[in-house]
Length: 193
Ligand code: GRF
Image (cartoon, rainbow, N blue to C red; front, side, top):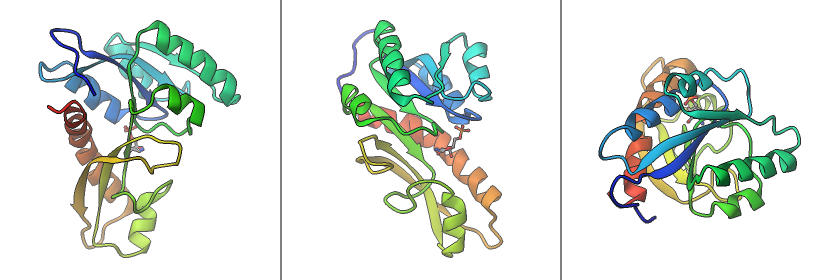
């Protein structure tokens, strides 16, 4: 991806569905001088998403789309993103699957974070499946989004050791802390920084 020069950071939208802790870490990163991106829009499918509060706190535009009618929501969404000159999308705990058509419009410019060492444990309930399989390690992955779920090219991964007596909650917490560091690093890598 080409890095905009001078003070023009790449205008980015973050898509969330829940707590938004990755959104918060991305906003903080975006405000540093080394960040090639600025966060200019927060999108959610869930009007009750806690993470929407960060948009309020940091005075970032936000919009909720129900995605009940995916086609209609995506058409409106694309027009808003275009109007706001958004050039990059970071999915961060976004629980809806974007259509092929939408992904094509932002080809190579949509990133996602997933709480497993992809290609292992795509989809939901990753931590539970990891523990049930008695894995020694898990982790998180930032990858490009393509039309297949959690299957795009891997940008960066962080491995985490599973402790004795690890629970789904303790593993989720441990991995989430790493996610907050990994996403900014992956963005720097995408921009060759
Ligand atoms: C993260 O574990 C992310 O990897 C997954 O959903 C969770 C979102 O957490 N896709 P948050 O909303 O960023 O706190």
